[in-house]
Image (cartoon, rainbow, N blue to C red; front, side, top):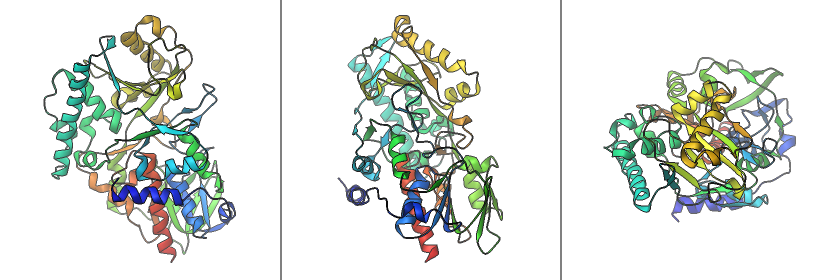
Length: 439
């Protein structure tokens, strides 16, 4: 364990969930800090502000907390993570330690995935060839990014032969929610290697929601305008106007780009460029019940498939050891399905299962539920990855604007982007900056 991981783990063990005055500090009509968005970043920021004894107003446009980390138990009768499910690099942030302190059941994800091809499990040689192709492509992208060349990741791939379509899926859509031609080599190279993962049996969204429990959160309160022209900042919502000394915006940049949240006066050019270039990709789950385990899959294992064209996907099997599975679709495939009719996802799932495991297995599928994160009004995508040439713009989201405006979210973390852990750490960083402004 290196020094950074040691410090992160020590901080996690010290910072267990607290109750106390969190809620009371969040009741003020005029606050020290207004926090827009009650996802992981907003929750982390509010907790730090409250721990420092400062007042806050934490508002959320939807009717729940958690943002893109949300666990549903009504669809299948068991915990289903509608958004984030993998707890990536748990040693670099406190979320796993928080979960254990709250009594949740966390356990390590299987280290390696399985590979299927031509309707059967691949042999050891083919599996080794596939993962070698992925590693070869990864090395080429990382080397280019570390050399300072910020170009489309797809442009620097070596010849990966027959494994190219499958490797491109693993490196691009599955890891970055985008096709590799839309992925910055520098952003890719800066991302922390996800060499360790954990799952929460009650759901990752459940864990995040527990961390919001001590806070006062104003749900169904959508901010429309943030105005810094007065002595205090004003945040106009559909439930009135809030006043505060500092504003933390913890919503995806897609919400700002779509004009759902206006900021006055106009954002500096540098920040506007960041909003336009640190964009969200598409990643969705087609979750389904498959009783009896007819495919002979192991609990929580990730299954890759050899593909010839561009219609690639992965499978997270037997979530928590049960009969719930999730076909993972991302990039162009997920975008097509999200923009298509509701029945398109089920048809895609049935075709995939028939091809990979046979018609008998596909016929045993029960309830199906497909997410559409690009259509969610307060997300408009899954997670960010910088467009080629613009990885450096993430830093614009880490700077204080006009002495009163601060950004937080996975888009505002340079190495843990695309993860709930990165969002949490960015919220803590934003709170520290806000406290500095408040003196």
